[in-house]
Amino acid sequence: MIICAGNNETFDFAQPMGVGLIETAMNLTRLCLFDKPEFLFFVGSAGSYGEHKIFDIIESKTASNIELSFLSNDAYTPLDNVVSTNSSHKKDVIVNSSNYISTNKELTKKFLELGIGLENMEFFAVLKIAQEFNIPAGGVFCITNYTNKNAHEEFLKNHEHAKELLSRHVQIRIKELTSQ
Image 1 (tube, one colour):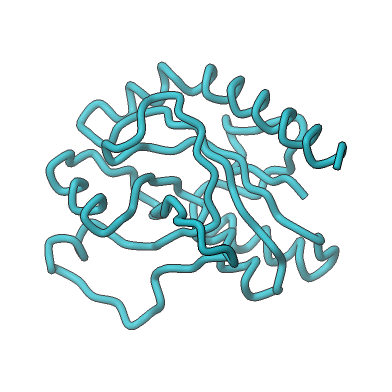
Image 2: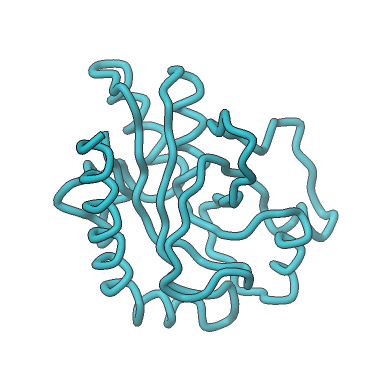
């Protein structure tokens, strides 16, 4: 099953789950309880912490849930804040999820030091629910912005084109999978 966030980030081939960690977790849990999919593939936009360029397409099976306050040693968590469905030994780009969009370029450089490359609001919830229900899962992302003070403006400017690129990428991947 192909899923996406919702609101202005929808695709005709994907089922919307909601925006942010909470809506996604609630709606995806409900879906899995009543009609458990064989696999989950999340499609969405992402912000780059600096390593990936605008309109890059990145696939991942690993997500984290690290808040900016953790990076400045102003918070800690007793929870496991990284989840992966990656069973191969191939290195994955880690996608960080929060209900907030990062705008502090200097602070978000610390994500790169931790091996985290992108941020997307929903992906951690997708992988946590997939893990709970033992469903293979992954995601594909198109970079719309960098995590800096212009993040929102860049996102708005690049969002429609990123959705077009994602749509083409997913259609190619579906053809590849169905021809095997």
